[in-house]
Image (cartoon, rainbow, N blue to C red; front, side, top):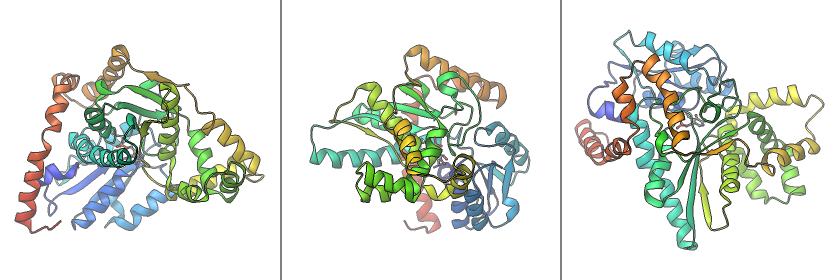
Amino acid sequence: SCLVPRSVMRKFDPTVHRAVWPSTGNYARGGVAISRLMQSRGVAVLPENMSKERFDWLDEWVTDPADIIRTPGSESNVKEIYDACHELAKDPTNFILNQFNEFANHVGHYAVTGRALGHVFEAMLRDEPSLELAAVVSASGSAGTLAMGDRLKDDYGAKIVAVEALECPTMLYNGYGEHNIQGIGDKHIPLIHNVMNTDIVTAVSDEATDGLNLVFTTDVGKAYLRDSLGVDPAIVDQLKHFGFSSICNTIAAIKTVKQLGLGPDQVVMSVATDGSEMYGSEKADHLASRYSEGFREADAAAIVSRFLLGAGTDHIEELDTVGRERIFNLGYFTWVEQQGVSLADFDARRDQGFWGTLHGMTPAWDAMIDEFNAETGVRV
Ligand SMILES: Cc1ncc(COP(=O)(O)O)c(C=O)c1O
């Protein structure tokens, strides 16, 4: 989504530009892969402490090892990523595609992810017409994915739930800190987050996601779920598709159900943002540091009881105007003071008309994409 408008408006030229993809999660992977498919160079900019699997993956995909830039820190060190991007931007052949302030990211998720989830809900409705879409839950990295909530609120009246790591609770407590839910929670409010349309914020601990990752991916953990809790083996087999932020979304969805007192006809939707295969090395570290004597059934039981069955209404806020304003205004320090966005542009995003205009742009973009494909001979 970030690249398409730039390409079809002829601002980005893959034969000249190196696309720069700043990220703490999957965005850099997707970006580098797209650059490679376009037979051009892509640069991943990400904190040095992201998982080994992410770097291994990138090593395979970049055309030059110098195209992986490691910035200081870990998950929540986004300022350092911006600093690296400002340096790279001095070279006019570098083209920075910043997911955190690129409105096309929001529009893409509104138009595509939101619609896709809408189709899923429509399919559910065919079987159970009494269902109601109560809420949409997404942990926020760039806040792009959260825009699916804007779409599902427009179409079905769903509440939008934004989630972050308890160890870095920027929205909930204006807090800071390090955490291990890779891909989310970057110690700032992204410019493309439609905060004034967000209904609930909640935080999930990385202790929960690290712990449940063990339960979902170890033989001991899976046996406990199957044999002691009676979870269908087919479901247990699918749990490997839940990486840290996917587990975080799931816990947040449970918290939302409890907070809103929802019943069986009220649906909460979320997304599994990546799978456990990105976190094998993190799992080994966690096992070694916390379970050096071995990971036992009692350990799995303790994790499930505390973090899954015990997920409750702590660290959750239903936003009123004051709450929304508080989160919105926090973005001022990043965007206006630090990154040079004009105050008028920053404030314009309070108004839902601003976002409505953005959402209305998709037919024009689709037409430009068709025209571009026809001219370049790309067939989809
Ligand atoms: C693994 C993972 N989870 C969650 C997210 C958050 O998505 P978004 O940036 O759309 O808020 C990302 C973003 O890159 C991610 O890589």
